Length: 257
Image (cartoon, rainbow, N blue to C red; front, side):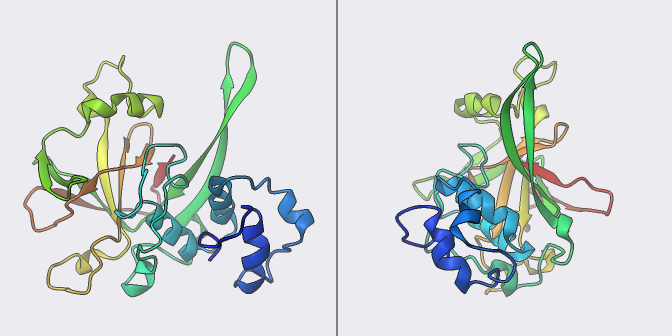
């Protein structure tokens, strides 16, 4: 409701909607409090929502941000809060099927902020926000290459995870290191995280939503990931296309920037 509000000022979205929401008893929505939040852009609205919402709503916002109908996905940090959201996208995937997340564990999805420091000047230079996400299951891209849906809605096949025209984007986000003694393809991986359990990822379930999956592009060694702008063909019946993994209690999850 807040993100679909037509309020002229971004902070007014909270004044208009929060008193009517389930969070009305948890937060004071006076102008004094909201004014301290420094709400000035739609991105700052989303970041605040990632702080105050319950687990299910946070997950829905993340999957909405990576939905194949949303635009500008994965281009600007933080990628989980800078997509142009599609108002006609499905945002209730997590309640339609058994969930791929522990909705009772606060660490399932958590917003963090970190400040980088200029070692030469000994000054704080920039604050970065990231989400730590812990699904129950996830999939990594197999060794057989992948298929993706282009903007012209045609399906293409590719062997390379790193798009050469996107190298400036990946280096800017510090996903890849051009000076590392490692091939670019070996530095990165592509991860698919569905919002529902693996047993529902079958063609036998006609009501399974096809767009309730986010794709991450990142560096597993650095544990630094961004939402991928590509719409992959996530078909588990293709041999070698996707490799299934389960997360245990000791996993650090995925840090999404």
